[in-house]
Image 1: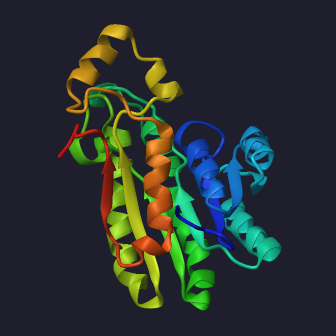
Image 2 (image 1 turned 90 degrees about the horizontal axis):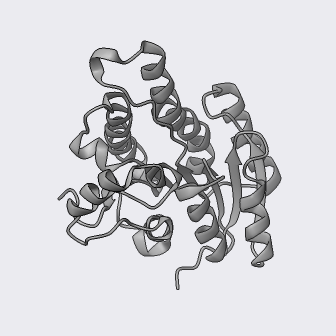
Length: 246
């Protein structure tokens, strides 16, 4: 089993779905988890981790507030002495065909899904460089690789994360910091549960493995990339999509 004992992990969007699963998985591997989400939304995740015997704390954070994000990283380091793992998972959708898409919906998705990763990564890099170790894992999407009608803003943000990851990976590899992407496909979350049955069936038909993925399957990939077993992997995209995009 992967061991992350003594590691401190900062996970954004940790209140539900994939983010919650990532926080739970990292904690089960022994990491101290700082679960970040808007308001008090990460409290349930933290309670679940503690109930299972893990260590976690909730942080109220709007990732689009750059100053607050940098302050949250600094405060976590002040409390725990270090951050070993940063998971940029927070994300939103504002779907609309390109001809009808409002600029504010474009900007909101880019701010949450891409610019927040820039802000948090920049905040954590100096401490990681000083400790000469770190794992940064960005959660992209199959849509960032394949595109999808009605999601130009979402696809751009998730594709941008891939390019961002590769550039930063090259910059910090000499300091023993790895930067990778996990790109989920269709995963069983609140978002996919809202899809109408016929549309859902059509989506499943496009997946060679014949089913939607589970949040914990994405979390398992994140835990691997956060571990010592992945020490020689950087700048890569690990697709967890059931073969939906190859």
